[in-house]
Length: 358
Image (tube, rainbow, N blue to C red; front, side):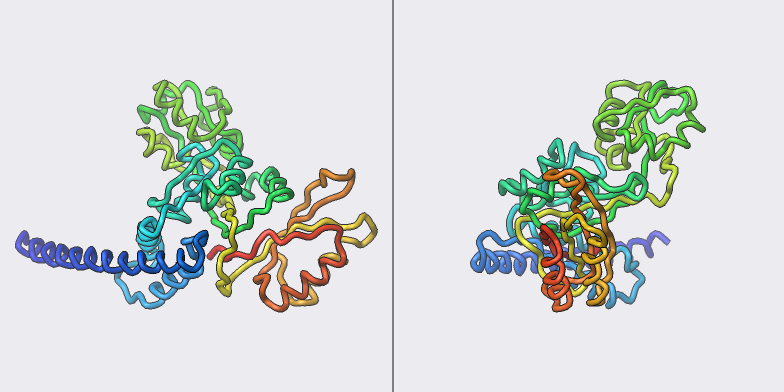
């Protein structure tokens, strides 16, 4: 039997050697593409989501097994992340600190080879990208349990940044501590949203243990390192980064807990054919104004996937609407709808057309 293992392992080693050789050949082509991009536009985004999506879709369709198709995406995300780092540094600002769900969403989009810049607020994420200190920014926009992140919406009112993409991140909360022993827990720390999303589980399993709010789930994990009798509600990544042991995994009350994140950039992405467009609108204060505003979407066969409202900071009882529709701003039907809407509102701004999450 050991002889059989030896033969298969030799075969795997030879295959791995060939994979490594091909990865290096692939990298040489990537470097040349990067040079051409820079010649055409010195400030161009090296990250091209349309090309990445096309590669993954083509390979998934070609895959005949037994390697699982769902494994192709994470493997090639890391290959493409490492390749992009050869073209030039990909700097990504996100709402920190490390090990937050925004950090996890950033890594899901850009892989582990990007240069990540944790900042203290959503405003700071916008600022890093606007000032050119980061190529991209990642901010939360809505959660299936907590709803919309109003501060992110408000930032778009005065910012010229574009939405470059979106990421859907599953939010799984784990209870962790230094020892991993449930009976030793005397206090629990986490972000207010995490505590709220685990309220029923905490009341059932820790009815007499206080749950204290801190700035982030990552900060809660840091406090566990300092005190063996403290537990944190945080991500699996936080447990790995801070050397903690998981007491109980997935303690969130709603197991279908997802957060949507937006990717920010100064430049738009390429059209993919599976895009959505986000708009910001302000309407006149009159009867039927919102109905009149939305009617062109239906008349041009456009599906509206989301609408949110925020009070205008310019005038009392005046509202700004944030709308997501299917399609790209360069499509003829989208162009016509936007033209009609522009004449019916006080203010209209296209926040970006970008690949829809798949």
